[in-house]
Amino acid sequence: MIGKLQLAAGAAAGALVAGLLVYAWASLWLVPAARLEGAETKVGEIAADAQRQENERKQDDAYLQDRSDFDLCAEYLSARGLPVDECQRLRGLSEK
Image 1: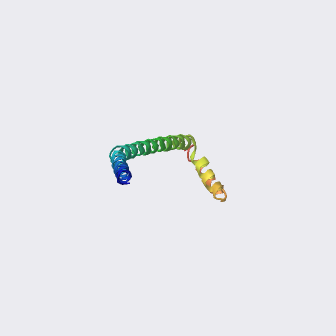
Image 2 (image 1 turned 60 degrees about the vertical axis):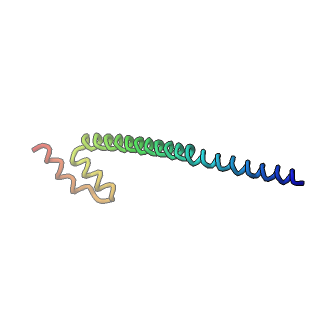
Image 3 (image 1 turned 30 degrees about the vertical axis):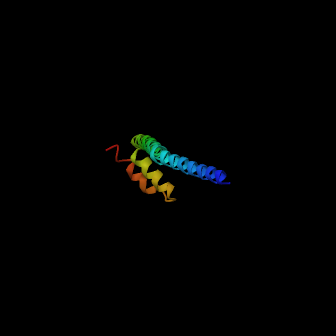
């Protein structure tokens, strides 16, 4: 009977030590590595998003550079449901 109790106590102590070693290993190595990997992933996502936004701005700038004042005015007013009659006077400005 005492031998079985000693065996059970030894197994419990061994399980406790093994659990503490696994916990220490996870908290000292796995968690920091996961945090670092997560941070690197986030930085990569931010860089990719910034590049995408820059490309969109370049496309917008190129589009706006190719448009005349009249075209920009007409597009702005028509998008808001307003008449484009006021933009007619911009047609003559480029000729002068």
